[in-house]
Image 1 (cartoon, helix red, strand yellow):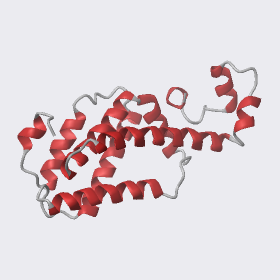
Image 2 (cartoon, rainbow, N blue to C red):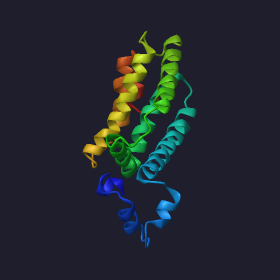
Image 3 (tube, one colour):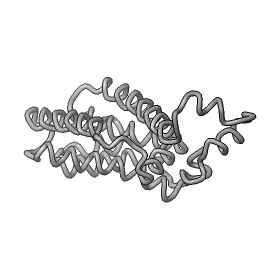
Image 4 (cartoon, helix red, strand yellow):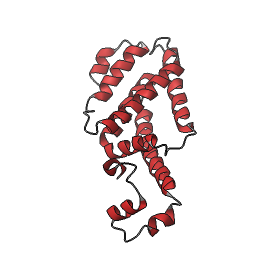
Length: 183
């Protein structure tokens, strides 16, 4: 609903109306206020995203493949869950997301560790894993913000294009395999 009407118009009354509820009491029984409801919505979306991305990354057989899976899974989730991703971006702009950043920090640490392992195994050049992880994470967030600005944006091959871009930036050499989508 946030994706349809925007954060500002997403009141208990509007939610009740769209949900076919006779009053807002059922909503207010479960949530103390609108902020609590919005945090719950955001948490559900982030949890669903984490499951999708983690599942894809677990299938990876190398650090490089795991980074590729991370990029592709985030883009695929954004493409197949547009209303949720647009809502998440709207909640971010409205300041309704938890601000501690612990989830983001943990994700970046995981990606930095993968990149460091890839450097050790010769899959990536001697890039700084922390900087590379930060750039990679900001890129994924940029995909979500892109949908917020342009909900109909074509993301069909964006995952593969981002993989090729990051392979170039991380110093990998097997670009033909990336272009074929076999990594």
